[in-house]
Length: 508
Image 1 (cartoon, helix red, strand yellow):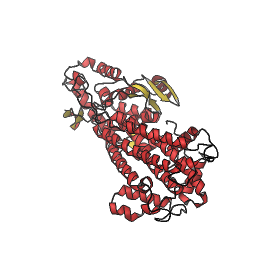
Image 2: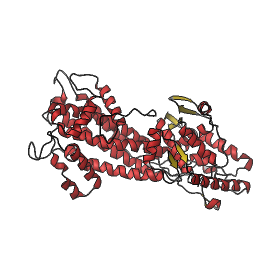
Image 3: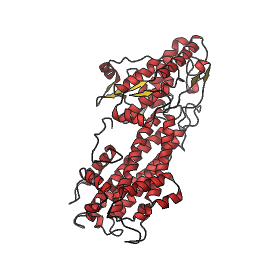
Image 4: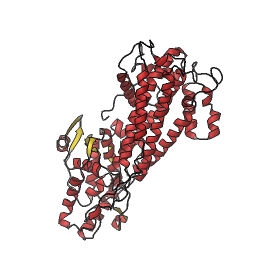
């Protein structure tokens, strides 16, 4: 059971809720804080004080006073008009993460919603009712207005949801679970959509997958080291201590561990004096990507526990202050950084693939073909990897450097953070396929060298991978192998310690 407080949610807890369907409850003292902030809103409405978002219009309409009798209609209209997302829906697991993060943010007690609103978000989460939320349409400032409006529709019994593997009308799923829709009261619509939960949810799911892929990239690189008879001296602890980056030292240590008893790696001068950078600089390049991922993790864990709507209610209603916590710039920059970090793992992987298949760069069979000339082997797999890394270079262009004014120039600088998080996820899918190609080529190379000479750690990984991708004994449709290997990398247990494969998550 994960207890939401609004302040203490961790990525490890998020992982349990998303991937293990762990149930969620709200902390009692946090719900009491929600009740106090709600009373402040009700007092404002009763005393006819003019406060933005409670009894005024929104954005450019912030100076338009709304009569008390129209406050509920104001919230209804807000959700209906703002639910204009377009494109394919977010992955279901991202929608699940949005429910979790929105409930956690409201539990901070600064938003002025009724406790029932938080309860209903948690009800949907625990019942596995996940709103269908289009991916496109958010500027990433004023919050993720369009995506979160589609989330709120489900609370109202409107729109569509994913439920038990099917897409259906929200009211049908709510009825099956005995959950009553809610009617929004003063400020509640704005409090629900004025936040960064779409970009943060997409970022969290992307980060969790990126972290696993970064670990896997090191094991795959270790296989390649064996396939190319790489020089282990480059991973000597003294080299990496001399530079001082912890992440670089950690990568070198893990590679040394994976290759500790290998008979396929070589020593400096045994076959050649130095390896190419794609082998020799694995700790430096992968380590730099880990530095970026550590930065991303820090920002995500802050944002997961942040109050990001507007206005915020302080001191039991003594102060209601308009600000800009909905601005997604911190996450936009983090997502752009993650894009580059993951793209680089694919870039260096593709260069290792080239060394595995190019007969001018190694003594392996040309293109790892079982019958060079008659059969092409891995020739076009390298083409596919090159295409994916080239596409990543386009996707890695920073979204956060762009801004288009909106709401009649009232909202004149926006983050584009949701675009950044979506592109980061696209890069991640491409990178995983590139690493799947390296894995296929490295498996073939170590087989050529002699599996019995492999390190015990890499041998275990080899045996598990061979359950997914058979040895290349003749040309076949390698697209199927690439996709199978990529899906395996996405779902295996990590850190890798056995050949057990986890089941595919139902929301992926």
